[in-house]
Image 1: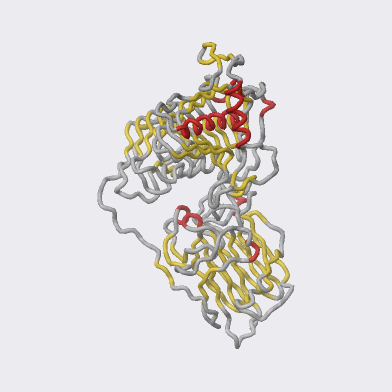
Image 2: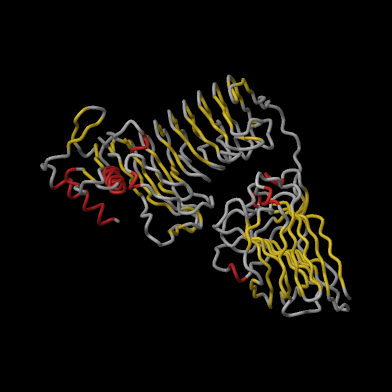
Length: 573
């Protein structure tokens, strides 16, 4: 990319006498210049005219000038603003037709479509309708990207944008009314983390813009202060900018917790219109933090919707709602008072038990060979399991909670027994509310096995796994372990039952392995999704083992699963 940037700068310096491009801005004819870049996808890139075919080229040109000025050390450092004026069209920051998987070049960082370092930048759509100028990408976690793909990253302060749609169309159809030939269907209907703009800096001002994605929207998230004026947002959870002030903005919430958390000063909504598609309770934040809401109008698909600040309010976080309505009626969520925080329940760690002892439980952590490609390591320096309360979808549920990725729990049968049949029942309460079970489709699964030899890792069981195919379900299939090697015994099936209240019964009897999954608590609109599931397969290699094996490779906290009511019995001894 550096040779291209150098070419841009040299072209601009050598050919400054060349005629510039004329265009309309705010009803007046203007010309392009070093501080007024023009983007039109119907024209050729001509840096000497400060004219570009793509938004990427214009941003890189602005960055190159900024970095060049910053390194000169001049006392009269350039303090002018740079405008990037963009004609109506759809501009792809990342090539949507490239089949390559995007991977970050920085460890533990999300992949970005484009990183830009610049101060005093304005992005201006050349239409009063922000739907006319679209800056787009269509990648997300496990869907064209290894990691939470983010379209843009800005490092710098004094950034403004107006009259633009910023969209990640990984899980949302791109509909472009101005030219339907530029429409594009979503990459995948299963909702994953698909982000827009992350930044590091201060004094961001965004006017008359639209932000379209679902999970982890990230509209200029990370800036110290962001003012949104007359903007529109579509999102599910963990989505909005926690340092934002939202004035006369519109929102459609497809998830119950649009903020993960806000900043210390809190987020502010003034004179906004908010529509919730959630049933039951619509929260603002996943983690207790301050929010102020004044003169806002809520509407909802659910006529009985309730509004609340957060599932577990911390009284030290002051939240205030005044002058608001819900479906046309006055509505107020009580203010959280500034009083000392009461003691909250904590997880009680259980000492690790790595030894394998007949007739006893083993508590340790292990990374199975079938997910060796994923970049995480097992920790054994802290307790692997704890007893405690779940979060989010498992709020109010108590049981054993994995505290380390790869947490494993195994029971070793007695050596003086030759076990034949076995049954195991267990209650599972995933923290994920939507039924996806795990944080992402990155080798995150739960195996529960019986007829198991804990030394050789041999036996039979059932796998719950998150895949890129679903955002509200997991896939399940029966598995056979042979000396640590795992193979499926059945075809995968979609399971909507892996959420709070899930019950599993595994039975090995008369040469057949059977798994029954049920959830009496789950009551979807489509009652067929709540029907119990039964999977069965022949036990092709009968064994005398009577052990139990529970392996959780998922992420933790709000992505974990609670385990309780574990019962096993033996048949046909």
